[in-house]
Amino acid sequence: MKKYLILTYDYELFLGRRSGTVAQCQIIPTEKTLSILKKHQAKAIFFTDTLQLVRLKELAANGNIHAQKDFALLKEQFEKIISLGHYIYPHIHTHWLDAVYDSSTHQWNLSDVSRYRFHQCNAETRKEAFIRSIEILKEIILPIVPDYKLDGFRAGGWCIQPFSDFRNLFIEHGLRYEMSVLPGFYSFTNAQHFDFTDCPGKNIYRFEEDECIEKENGRFIQLTVSSVPFTSVHRILDRIWLKFSPYFIKNNLPASGNGHASQPLIPQPEKRKPGFDVMQNLRQRIAVELLTPVSMPLYKSFLKGNDYMHFLSHPKMITRNHHLLFEKFLDDAFKNFEVITDFKICLKEKGLE
Image (cartoon, rainbow, N blue to C red; front, side, top):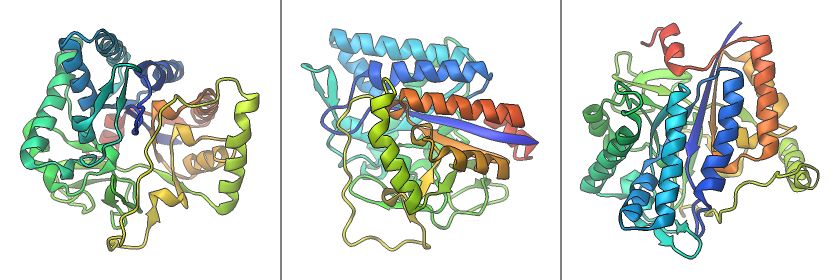
């Protein structure tokens, strides 16, 4: 039985007053991820926080030695990712335009979320951010793979709405594949703002003007993110596991960073349809960093019952135990099914290319 397993990673630092370091949040967990993927010859997609690269490069050009080292580390890992046959695509978080570098810790203060959403920037700023994002990835990737196409995208914070902010930029830069939609979910906070409650009941579909409206001959393709039901019993057991697992699993804490607690908008905007608030965890996005002994059976059952499964993960949140569980999940998947991890093969076999 054939299964299409789409493995995507949002490659970024933490929000908040302390971003965490490049080494701990990005380089180290991604190296382990690459090792696990190589074991199964699996392909993944890394959506890199492009404006982080832009800001680091600016600091490096001004003689900041630590920024130079961090940029070099990221560039080296991107070269490895591409050489191994994985994809790298832009993931644009415009809050980086307001980031402040702390020379004492060699980290960033990313607590200003006033421009977290692409939509919170004016049209000129959006265009410039997009162009610089594409240019910096081309600068790194094209010397390795000259014909590489930067044709995929995930919006920062999954805030792809309104798509009218992106559409002309997608067309101008040749982007075709969009992967921000979590079907049935919504979030209205001072940072995130999206409503995917009325997207089509399909894993993959074409669209043109609106990422939640299918259009048969649309020029863009949406590959939605998967999720599983998560009951109150699951949440209680999960909390118990997360509380005690660091005591008997070495190095089972995620990389350090403050994070940022988003504030719900009051009053809440009207949803298109009933759905799931991302903050409430009534339904759980499928992700490596959310894999526990509690969620593992849910993930296995989902894969058994569906031919499409899309992980949306974050290296900065992945611990040693997550890696162990993910490796076991892949071992089981490849043992029991014919697994396809290249999304472009998936699209071709489903008749969408």
